Amino acid sequence: MKLVVAVVQDRDAQAALAELNRHGFGATKLASTGGFLRQGNSTLLVGVSADRVDEVLAILQRTSRVRHQLITPDATGAGVEPGAVPVEVAVGGATVFVLTIDRYEKY
Ligand code: 2BA
Image (tube, rainbow, N blue to C red; front, side, top):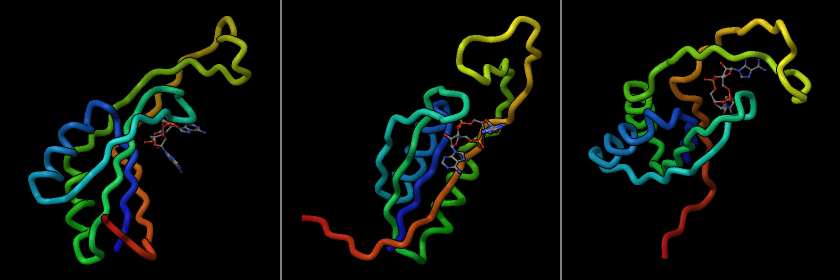
């Protein structure tokens, strides 16, 4: 048994959930916040047998897009410095962790 933990952009989460459900995977969506941009994103939890992990990864790959975002660095958190230059960051598609689950119970 594996647990796929995937951080995706909010805009991609519904499509990912729909595809996961369509293919018979159970999933949970948690509201999360990126530590760098401090903006909302979605974390999907998908419990899956080890032999089907690649199917889940393929779904996440095709439903998650890379988007480019301009941010103005605020290193201290005290406010953007005058004259600070915006930089572009590429966000997404999906940041995925696959964990081995020792035990899975459902009551
Ligand atoms: P954020 O932490 O808000 O990061 C958004 C995007 O900002 C990242 O996209 C990356 O392109 C950029 N970024 C992050 N940290 C940076 C830094 N120190 N310097 C310059 N640019 C930086 P993604 O890599 O696609 O990550 C999207 C979201 O996935 C992240 O949102 C975070 O919520 C999650 N994530 C990414 N890597 C993670 C990790 N190793 N552990 C846990 N969560 C992670």
